[in-house]
Image 1 (tube, helix red, strand yellow):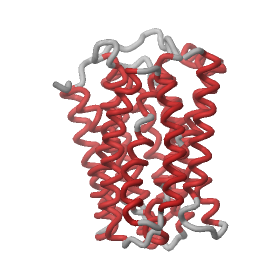
Image 2 (cartoon, helix red, strand yellow; image 1 turned 120 degrees about the horizontal axis):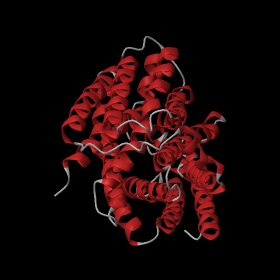
Image 3 (cartoon, one colour; image 1 turned 90 degrees about the vertical axis):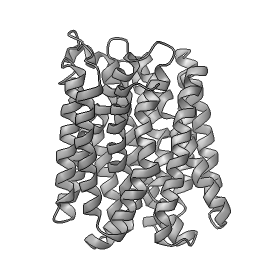
Length: 382
């Protein structure tokens, strides 16, 4: 039976997932409402990711000695307030600022939640416990994001962010009631945490995550214009595709956790990055065929989201005594991939090329991630 504490942490992942990924499905609606271009709307994705990159290490560094349960509630409180500000944004500039603020607690929450989840289960099931935290992200893509996309398309994107505020409030209550009180690390000084970043191993991990996961975001950041303008589907079909992608992510996340516990996490990550690259190339060449588009939306979502548990375990195992900052750094790196995927994927579109060319950018990024993971395995025998 699943522990209630893992459910509470997964709820946090749900709220964060809806915040992060609903923007992809609502991109055209937001652009129209604010009278901006699609590449400009894409900056709202990148600014959120930048907030994660800044907030993850900074918030963990200055709060690592606090009790994890209280820290999780505080981070979710920040998340809720900043998403409320997003819903009330009067224009593009305030929207950009609010998106940056909303991203600040993201990485720190997942970093702390990953450590708490791993401590709640017996050794050998760490990756599967962590996958339950990330299951919130997949449920977000399966249910929350399609609902948010539907609300944003048929009513207003502001209502979508108000829905996120409600999820944040429920999550705070669930953490308060269900997450056990895990003792704080009294030795977790800032200097001790910062030692982690002195190792080449840490920076190689950061690089492979930042580059490799960009493949996912080059795909999903522009999935809406690709499916409507290239594949020929109507905007009304976007919630269905987001559900399909979310179902793939849900299945892939569970499978990825079991894979990471069965073989070494680094080997699993390398294989997943290679599979991701292959999927994105296939998306590019099959976008004109409706049946293939449907199949590849599910498969690509499954492959892309199976990576989470592997990279979190690689980070935690590489940072004895500084696991929390390592896990948070992983989330920051994941969102560097978010920013890079959205930015680099948007470049060919800004140059006037087709809306499906970001897939090739993503394929190259995923393959680069696989190469860096291979180097990591050889150098550190991990």
